[in-house]
Image 1 (cartoon, rainbow, N blue to C red):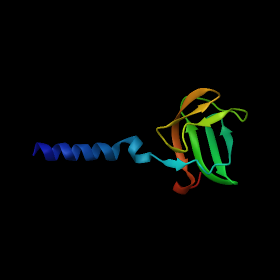
Image 2: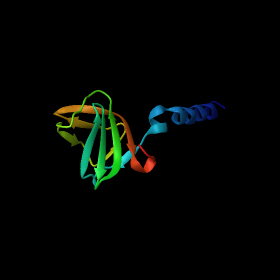
Image 3: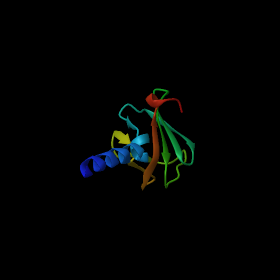
Image 4: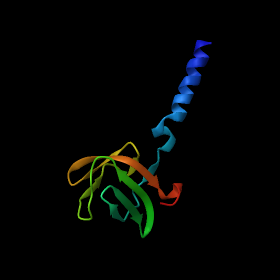
Length: 100
């Protein structure tokens, strides 16, 4: 009985975890350009088609910023480097998951 309750609670915790519910990942290997929408939002493009939108948690970005992705396949819980500062991603939305 205790095992069943533990399993049920574990499944419920996973289902209602914010990171699990809204986590999105994208392959940035095909990105050719990016555009700063505002001081917290960057949209990445592949030949004029949107690939992903990233909203930053603790950094600001401007059109002249130097942006380095830490890897080519990124998710919500990853970070990137802007002007030499490590920046956490608040949200990442891929173009395949809907319009932005």
